[in-house]
Image (cartoon, rainbow, N blue to C red):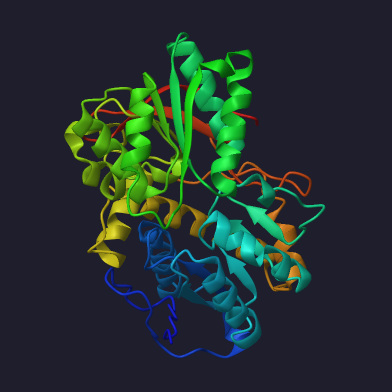
Length: 397
């Protein structure tokens, strides 16, 4: 039986553990209790970095006195990216720990498994760490709020980029056999429009698969010269490394959920990654253009103090830091009304919230009819050291 993982902000979060009890819970009138699930173990464990960064950010806030006089009690439980485990852990957070809200739980399939439950219980499921379109359905799921740009939008923008830069491209795509992959593919096909016949190979994988070697051979044999590797970090790294070992040199596109330098590009072999493109909405702290950026300097100082063993090249740390800042803004806006209804109200009325690690021109902006927090990306190309931005900010806002 699994043990309980309680990450109480204000404690040190180590990189090697999956579940640990730190500190004691404080009285309800002095705390704000938030919970989430994340894969600290299993095939998508790279995403556990997001929740560790969130816990470390809340630790910093608590060291500064908390929010409106209350400390944040953040409970993050390992679900190993397994929907059945997500259900078990989420029920524990709601029914035993009585969290105020479920914040930034990781993954599409895991969050789908608890979306109806949380909405029936009227528990905010906010800033979901996934870009599935279903997080932007306030009529059916009024207690759910997405964070990432939707996968449909992102896929559409990548397809438009391909047509603009390689109009005669032959394209191969791999996706996970789940809702996230289907959203990406739907958007990508929409972006191709009448050029959809240029998609010469489309294949899938299961998160439980050990490798995607056979799919990679199939896509290479299709003659594709563009490869959209829409995969979680483990499989995105495998895809790039396998392409290199086969001598297949297409233009490789990575999704925003798998563009971490330390979690994807380094394991793939840096020599195989030069020229890979992706969409960013966050600053890469290792990009020389941000060397004098005050927000990046603050982030690096925070990393040194609160996450000394974590990688500044892992953009999942940047994401966790940034989404925690959005949560901070929501809680401050709630003032003394920490009802679940007000949490949702403040989470869905964010107006042009500019944050230090969002790219210039990109803000958090939503309303009760369109609740997704981020709506824009900018294309970037990896030069062997960092992501180098190019082109304009793209999106639907």
